[in-house]
Image (cartoon, rainbow, N blue to C red):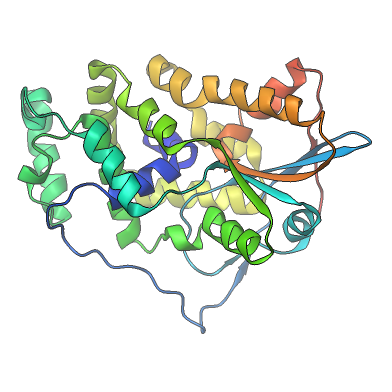
Length: 308
């Protein structure tokens, strides 16, 4: 579950964690790229859907990367340069707006504390995970499980050197802004936070339990996913992303399958308008069964892999 969320909803994870609360929080190390970092070539997968008047590129992203991967070049850069519009999952709102959304949907004023909502066997693991990150448990007493799960997914990655500023969304947004390209989102911040906040209580608790269970494997899992992404290996990436998806049908339906279907419909509708568009979404949406690529086939559209 943690693996799928990291790719499918990394922007939510980053935004929610960055604006988790107005209370004082520990200062985490922010990775800074060094001019002496050796660059490693990466060639992530890129697809194109086109007719005689319209071209839509589909690029799968990993929302957080370590500095030093050279991916914004060759075929990806050529496709981006040819496009007049950048489309992301969501245009990142201001920190103040994200904080307001998280405070409104991520905390409960009444009811049991988060620790009380967890099964007794998971409480020591939960408290230790917070302590290892230097985060007081009181900070999350009134938090919803989805918010804690996303924070616990993100914070260790920041310590490992993964950085949203090195992620494709940040790089692409900066380039599109500099070149005065149109930037739009497939979804709004309210929608994305709503997907997580709208999960049933039992699914949210199961999500947090799964996150706690997977934390010791987080570094290796993330490295495996970034490796598959860098090699342009969607088959391996899809397997990593979708293993065990049937264990949490509500989460899979809400965060992956339904969104994939809506985005495929958006692409079909956009094909009616001439122009060239660069669409960048989490790589998990473009790999595996019921991906956007597969949904397009049902709509009689073919996404062709761009070889470069």
